Length: 193
Image: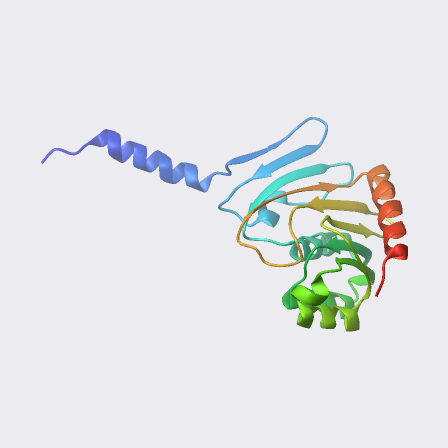
């Protein structure tokens, strides 16, 4: 019986390649680029470091709230201001847990006006849990800050689980944070309940 060793070798290379990150490198200016469909995004991102920007893709294994909680575990007790087009009950429960555990000092949420109709049960839960305002918003942004950190997360991920490819960036630059903080605070103050 003849065995095709080329096919076996190709198969072994394919299996080994599947174990390696598809795309992950850091540039000299502390920018990390991560894209690995076989790995939970937090394992690829690793440690959040001041001055480091992280560009990432994730494949159905994360959402905005899970990413916020991952960052909070590294930064310690922080304030949060976030936007999302939609929210799940599970995400609200997670944020409530971290708030009661003391990891979230204060949280404000900007949510799209349509959530009242699209997701009435999560919306009602959100209104009882957090300081929130409704506006017309599709942006998914989270600001996380305390005495040591000023973090901005900009992503395509909502505060819901969605089995799709998503893209995001984590900034640790105060200038970017200040820009987003001013815009989102102004929008929050204009929003309605």
